[in-house]
Length: 507
Image (cartoon, rainbow, N blue to C red; front, side, top):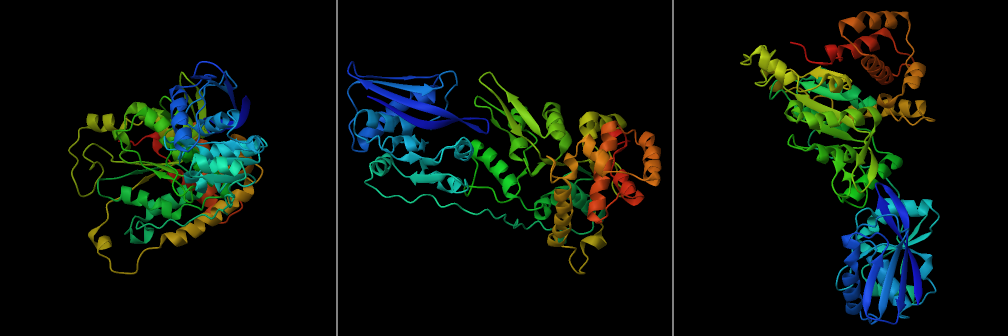
């Protein structure tokens, strides 16, 4: 007897429907799985057989053929265990066909019939809803993820036996209740009010976060670069539901989704020994890397020159396009990578070049070699470069009132982001850093004084066309923080002071 069930596969962040067809005929006892299945899928016949028996059902002594359609799409993972098991039970007349075709089934089975948690449930359920499916059955441990998919009736079960009882109308089950999304404030001990001095760096961070701009902090060891970077999550604007959904899908595929969803912006800080694949994504199943896991958040690269040149050059295309394509033999997948890059570096190997209090021990050649680890094209993609000076003893020991807290800075950031949200209401861009050339022309109009200042600075700073556009984007953000409708010469002047000459630190 033939039975047919609906499941889904996952290609990148998109779910693709997979028909599970199970046919049982008299003959030599055997199980064949066809339809371009990988090893994990082929091994499911043993998991399914023992799960059925240990759940109190009988496994047919017959010829069992399982077809996964479409046959030309590779099937990976263990999410087909549940629909295959149900197909076997239905074809062997141990399960009614009445409700069998009403659901999308996803679930890995243990040998005792329990349903195990799956990675990637969220994007598969979203794709199922978009393609017109209305009901789904998933493992109980994926209940929280499923609760954020509105418009799809989802049931979550702990084992195969309960699923069968439910489909046979012998067990009542409550559908997973849909949850309303609400962004959470970042509770962090790293607050700007505890950072002594560093007013220039704090201002640069505020501008960078307000417009989503890439930021590089340079300074001697111990000046506070890493500490300043760790305060950034406390002033990041709250996630919208659409942004949170994008991030949650990526984290679900990567298997790092906590609490069933994402409520705060990501802050990823890979070690400088990271490989290009760990950053860009890849591996046998083309999983997302750090730059995709940082989507809609921050990618912090501490001690930037210590990363390998190959790793750093991996960043160039995602910084420009906001996405990355991972090409492997098995498949090609495109992941979003709209992150804000924050980096820190010392001015030289010993870290004391330019210091007013410490002597630099490095030769000119060593300094140039160290700074040249960061290529010009990569530096050209950094919008804001700021020097972090060492704090004086008087500033460090000051017992006056605390500095401005992150909460107040975040209020200004949110107001600036609201302005940008209204500005780009009919555009793909969400912040000033994502403006296209056409949008720069429309929203960054300059008066004669601004144009004269930019003309004078263009040659002096050795700006490229990309650098020129990035100055305009930063100026637009500064104007937004001032709640100014138009960019004026003061905004342009401040944006220019954050532009590194020739895209590099000059000796």
